[in-house]
Length: 326
Ligand code: SF4
Image (cartoon, rainbow, N blue to C red):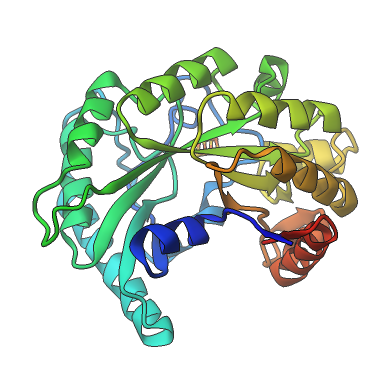
């Protein structure tokens, strides 16, 4: 039996204890694929509130950030949101698990799609919190710039902390697939050449990259999914997240699902593709996620995505059959 290099094991080995990721949703952020800069409507599967639960409780604003507009009337409120969300989750994790080390995860929307001064204020505030060892920034490869990457490189050695240890600065990019025709089909708004270019530039700065893959995109065969993983690994990513494509209400994909032109991936094929992909990973690439789902009424299909516990059980069993411990 062999233990897989999960991100949890990677951090435990590096820091001698468990590290907890705290997801943050900041209002005012959007995406060039939603605001019309590169496309309108977003990726066909995107219903952004479905992965921004914290925002639902907070007053949403009509103002949206744009990298070319330096004005940000929301900044004070955003910094407060960051602090409140961080402190609330940290307190819960500390009480429940005795957690001592944290990574602030800017998760929802495109978290580098804002004026640089806003990014600096948010990232530096996040790194100033006690017990924070780094950041993880979810974004798109068409929404990063040389200026932001240079800044993140400097941020790795952020000085306002008690230790001299370099910060973990992760940039999480949606790769999803390496096929341009599929990226077009899901209205991604950029091609694979853009992904290659910006992952390369991110790695050149010594930053850590996590690539997100989706299995079950419209028109993809298993061979294509595995080829996408293989090509993504060639980009030198440090960690990988796998997700099945599921359909939620109020997305463009809903229509295709309802009229029968999109059939979601079944669990057997998903797990088989996942296991084959995991077996391809080099030792240094950690696994950050093996599935995703949503347990509320907005999920239309596939219904196996509504029970995370069962999904994880089935995945772990399939990996065990291959002698792999997740
Ligand atoms: S990149 Fe992310 S936030 Fe933007 S449309 Fe696609 S899924 Fe939604």
